[in-house]
Length: 130
Image (cartoon, rainbow, N blue to C red; front, side):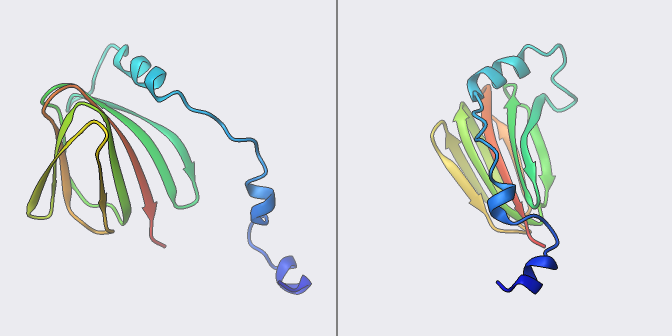
């Protein structure tokens, strides 16, 4: 990259942006903390955003048994990694059953919904398209 291009950069160089030390996240402790909250919300789940930067968001969802997220669309690639429990995830016209240790990846714009068949924890990442 030339000096002119470097001077016109819209945000700090990646070497600077990612120079911060890594931040470990204890997902088990976070899930325990979310479950301890007095209310689980209207649809029976709680969530906390762990990381949000640019086009990337990572969140932990904790579901009560039979709770759900209604059908919706994300304008980006979505990953759903089941850490605990059993989830039914409808994506388009297909229903996927995922248990702990399994992950589903959806392309941008895929209509999807989630339902917990038992108490569950899901790590979700969304990589928005610009």
